Length: 322
Ligand SMILES: NC(=O)c1ccc[n+]([C@@H]2O[C@H](COP(=O)([O-])OP(=O)(O)OC[C@H]3O[C@@H](n4cnc5c(N)ncnc54)[C@H](OP(=O)(O)O)[C@@H]3O)[C@@H](O)[C@H]2O)c1
Image (cartoon, rainbow, N blue to C red; front, side):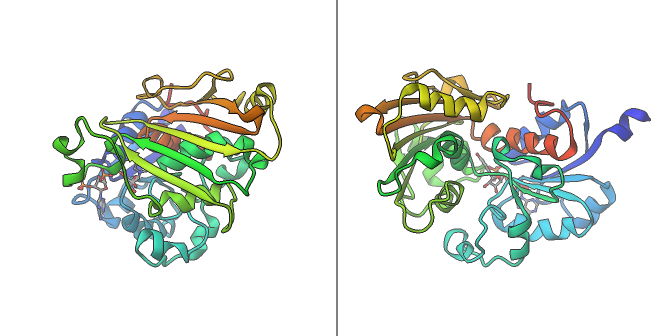
C-alpha cells in the first residue's frame, strides 16, 4: 500500500506515562506516522520492539531506563527520540551529581542532538538520537536564547519557574497528593534540580556566571510559567528586544512573542504545542523581566518531540500538531 510505505513506523516506550499518552494522541493523528508498537514497563522487551520493526522509537521513560535502552535500540539501526534527561548534558561527569548514575555511553552524549527545535538547524535531519529538552529548560531557553549575547554575566540570571504537578509524572508520592497540593504553592529543589545544569549549558553560562533556578509546584495539573530576571550589558529599547525576538521566531510556528509590556498567561498555552513569551524592560532598559509559558506535557515534552521527529523525517514541522 503506497500510503504505508510513505509513513514512518514509530514505537513508543513508556506509552502509559503522562508524556507517552500525549505522544500517542499526537502520533495517532499524524498523517505520516504509523504507530507499530506502544509499551508499558511490563509489555516492553527489546525482542518485541525488534519484531515491530520501527524506524523511530520515542522513549518516554525514566532517565535510567532511557540511558540503558537507547544504545540497544540504536544498535538495531533504529533512530531514537528520548524525552528523558539521559542524553541532554554534554559532560558525562555531571550525571552522577545531578542524575544519580554514572553515564555508560558518553560518546552518545557527544552525538545526541539537543532538540530545542527552534534552535536546531539541519542537524535534526541526520540525527540518530535526539535528546528532547526538559520542560523547565524549554521555557527558559526559548525566552533567553535570542537575548543570550546581551546578558550581563556579572549579574545573576534568575529563573523563577512554576510547574503543574504532571511535571513529576504519574508516580504516587505524598508531596504530589491532592491534599498536599490543593490550595498550596511551594518552592522546591533550589540548587539541586537537574534542569539547572541543562539551563546553564543551554545559555553557555560556563561555571562562573551565577544562575539561580527556583522551581515551584503549582496546584494545577499542567503548564509551566517561568519568570526570568536578567541584566543586560547595555541599555536596550523595547524595539531592539522585539527585533531580536522577531528574528529568532518570526518563522517559528509554535513560538509567539507578545508586544513589549504584555505578559503571557498559562491558560493561553495549556493543551497547545506553543510557547508564549512576553517581556518588560526595567531600569532604562538595562534589565528585563521575561515571562515564558508552555504546557509541560506538550512543548515541554511530547509536542516538541514530534516537532523534532518531523524535522528528522522531513515532514512538515506542524504535522500532527495543529
Ligand atoms: N511529565 C513531564 O512534564 C515531562 C516533561 C518533559 C520530560 N519528561 C520526561 O519524560 C519521561 C517520561 O515522563 P512521564 O512524566 O511521562 O513519566 P511517567 O508518567 O512516570 O511514565 C513513565 C513511563 O515509563 C514506563 N516505564 C517505566 N519503567 C520502564 C521500563 N523499565 N521499561 C519500559 N517502560 C518503563 C512506565 O510504564 P508503566 O505504566 O508500566 O509504569 C510509563 O509508561 C521522563 O524521563 C521525564 O523526565 C516528562
